[in-house]
Amino acid sequence: MIPTIAIVGRPNVGKSTLFNVLTRTRDALVADEAGLTRDRKFGRGRVGESDYIVIDTGGLSDDENIIAERITEQALLAVDEADCVLFLVDGRDGLTPIDESIAERLRTTNTPIHLVANKTEGLNIDLVSAEFYQLGFPTVHGISSSHRRGVESLMNKVLADIPEPEEESETILPENFKDSIKVAIIGRPNVGKSTLVNRMLGYERVVAFDLPGTTRDSIFIPFEKDGQAYTIIDTAGVRRRAKVSETIEKFSVVKSLKAIEAANVVIMLLDATEGMTDQDANLLGTILDRGCALMIVMNKWDGLSKDQRDAVKRTLDHKLHFIDYAKVEFISALHGSNVGLLFGSIKKAWDSAFYKAPTSFLNKVFSTAVEQHEPPSSHGRRIKPRFIHQSGQNPPTFTVHGNQVDKLPNSYKRYLMNYLRESFKLEGTPVRLEFKQTNNPFQGRKNKLTASQINKRQRMMRFIKKR
Image (cartoon, rainbow, N blue to C red):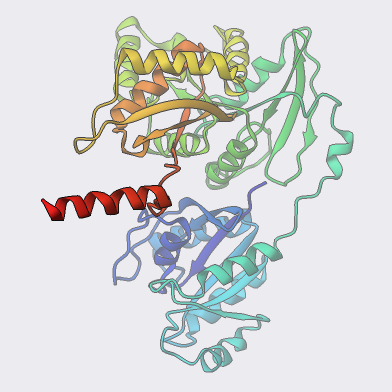
């Protein structure tokens, strides 16, 4: 499973700047003002071959007001859910009483802590570290997030210290677990995830049992229906935990992100009475980046009038126009309406995600697509796609070879993706295209003439001079 890393510290020590560096984005708002970040922000990063999820949190302080208390509460929840914590301090300001207070709180958790001194550019790191060793942590990592110094080595150290997930539970999993279709049900709290899971598991011929997964965040629920093995990956809301506070229940994003990583097919469950929210859109963006097969499922459909249903469909068409491959289902998990239809769509999406196209047939389809709609020229030069091969599955990935193919406009790329999807009847899965320039075998070679060619050229030059 992909590890989760939380960034905590007092206000204005550079947490959001480090978040942007780790995720290679500008998602976190950055300014020279304390307390700018108030809610958690989630992102995805990679160093070398290792992926991770990073959480930016609001600044911890000792202020006694409702906003500061909420920010602190959210940050401490992030600490509890993370695999490790980057405790950020300001190397220029030195050790402060608030840093000491935060260190005390962090020591009461079971999460590994890495003390990171930021803004150390131009400073003697040994002198900076000496002061912060008073906090009692064994190592002080010196970085400059605004200059990107020391960040990569820090992350290599952090990820190396995170233990690999235990695999003992795999020995007790069903024999067909690895071959099962892994389905993650994603959605905000109270959209009906638990009810839908119970409906999917409640058929007479279903054998189901709960098994702990390889991490403390997920529950894998294997079962079988109509001879096909499935595994539902539990996210927040599936387990019926007594006396779970509202704040903790809402902390579901990390679990959802990890479930997306493990899934073959993702069901994005939406509440038809509320529509799509910003958090739903953020999760959809993560699913698109991951390349998962996707289904959009509108729950609580039975409670809407015809006019309300028409309005919901219009809104979906407007907001989801960029996800034209995802099938939309309308169900009522509470009453069971259309829930049985989900299994057919799940199986079709899984088959499409792992589709393997015969190379000869693939090139025939590709040639037909190019003949029907030739690519435009680029700066007066023709773009010549020559052939194609499949380079990956889940999602289906195709590599196009030819001259100037890296100059193809996005509109033509979308045309090719849609043509391939329709030709192979792929449903519920994105199609990815990669482009590889065909090498010119004569490029870089010097124009070497043979001896006879040189003699012929010399005779021609002498003849011209005599004339």
